[in-house]
Image (tube, rainbow, N blue to C red; front, side, top):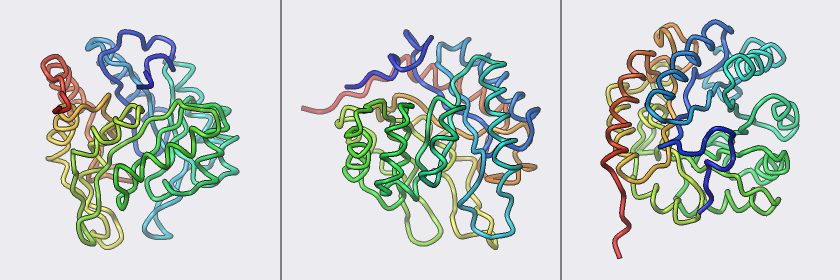
Length: 275
């Protein structure tokens, strides 16, 4: 099993990994409010914190939807968050030519779920030398996600997270098969549970993805029980005001309360693979 705690300074001894932040970079102030609050909470609870945010949303449902504040401006915000708070930073890329630019700023390159079979993109991420987080596509089995990880590993980079984020259930819903977590962990890579994207209701809301925020805590807790090495969640000071994923993000107080519960659950949970 690859140990993610060896990949980041200061991660030794952490109980679990928490990847959290707004869906997309809007302003430095919004990003900083989330980073400061969650870093403090994670430090209190013994979690290792990674800040996440997209610098550009390239996969919006409608052409008129918000895509970002501009690549250079957004990456500058990520770089400033990394410097000001001393935390690793994660962002996603959508094309091979984006990898080198993002790698100059962030610690973790994320492969979006819809692109998790794109061999050239996976290879470019691996060749960057950065930690790579692969979102298991909504149409992928756990086994197929492990093949995606293999594409990265063959570049010589085995610093790979796999992330469960739900599977399509018809056209407008997702469900989570929690068996995917131990199945992906069997590959030797650490696994995260994406608790906010998993509650989405895609293709609803007249071109705006809706969701069921009330189940975020449930999915996060079930992920921990199933053996997840950490939890991924999107957090915003005012979720309803976000230009992206407003229906599924948590507020800062909601995220802090959930993290407190997750710490208690990690203390008593130990998934055991039946013999």
